[in-house]
Length: 175
Image (cartoon, rainbow, N blue to C red):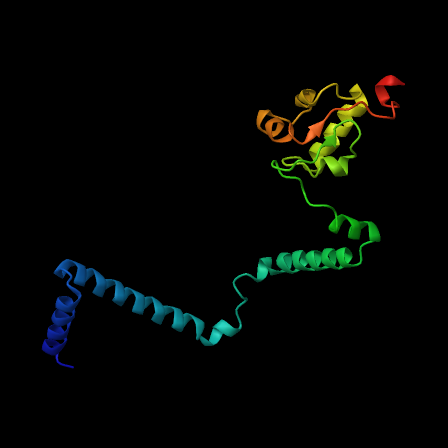
């Protein structure tokens, strides 16, 4: 191959791409490095002794396979779950801040409290535990006394809750 023809071809490509000589040099260097890297990679993968070598992640593959097996076992257990798990799947949707439903803070079970926005199962359990320890809530604003209920959550919940006296007064504080 004639060096002069290559030089002319590169000059024409530089003119068509409207790049400076420095940019063309940098692009050529990057292309050569990429080609060299690919050639080295090819040579490493096709060495005769490469077949006898251990794959690069063999030391940790067993952990991945164990985790995958645990996930599959969990999925199978979920598929074979008892009927109450089906009820949880078909549970009513979570309430949103714009909803007009009112939940009685003093009578609602933790599952119903868990439907409130910003209240998950843990926080619903805390609300129920607080209610058992301290008795019924006198007003919705007293919900702020429960750990995990901040001003933002309280603002979201205030329109969805009422604090009516429960029909059953057998709470822990009154015994």
